[in-house]
Length: 522
Image (cartoon, rainbow, N blue to C red):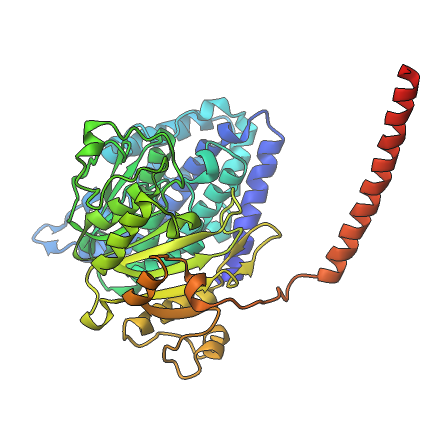
């Protein structure tokens, strides 16, 4: 399937499912979990069918023939083993007289009984749906195009539904932190290359970082995901913890997700043990109780407890502290953190002097679905090559984006490939870029790194010291004014002028009304 076909399928499925909800009595919040549960079942069967021949080929033939396949065999192939009554095809073919809600509830219970990590996490409230609505919804995910969808495509569909529910406010955290846009997740994964060892996300939301890591491992290794990585996540919100566990199960990724508050506990005990850390923590969290004994003695705060009433520099130190001697981290952070002063500046100074800061990327507005503010993506690398120990790559990508809608931007595949090539060149590696990637070739015709004014620059620790330890890329790369070629300025100016005329007329009318009222009072 092409990217355009995938996007079209995502939209068709969402529009169909959302139209059914619009004609029901259910709110978006009531609808979300059961719908995602059906996506899980459909996806689980697709993965099961794809894994079956692989599993069969791996079972050795003994004196009495081949043994029966086990759920462990299917897990090794990245799938869930489904009994017949939990298979989507079975549910979709139930006759009209059968209680489809009871059948789906039973399917969910059967899967939970087989997989303890999912115990209590799958929706089992399908009796709240009208029978006709539920049957129509089951049919939505039983189209031929969906049946043929591969794992990566279904992962995209699941993430698309998560995003759309997030935009509707259906059980999302404040600010929609549970869903990190796939563009930013992919940027982080591409930059840190998590292909082995322990992967940790202490603010894991719905587990998107782990899912993208799984895709990365599959595309860069001949081994199964669970052979090479082990995922550990911490999430404060109950519903998001469930989403993360389901998301990992859907993608056949083994991992340990614990519901806990990362400010007051470190449930996985991973300080100094992680090969990779990835996160999109909630920005500017205030009112963290810094008087707690756990916080005051927390080994994850080696550079000190920030005095500012936000937790940005607590998170930043957590990510640094979890890494082993060669570990890499990538995380999203509020833009304000790059220049924060006072105690936060002192912490940032120590981070910079440690040599672990590898790259900072400025990202523009409208990448998040529920907030429009820009952000930075930070990258740490404790295993830098000797020649790069005192260097930091600064990328100002605020003018790098693809306009998805009038309110949402992302990175195109070409842009992601190009940005990834830049950090590879910074590390002295050969960029892996297609010959058709004009976005990259126009900037780096020799396929070798060079500083580009207004876009990227490799700076030294001396440069950072001279700039008061600022980690804002724009301060180093310079500023370039670019116009948005896809924006119709003339039409928009005409619209603004018309709006202004209407406002002026309304102001005159209001003024006359006020004057009349005053005269009547006198």
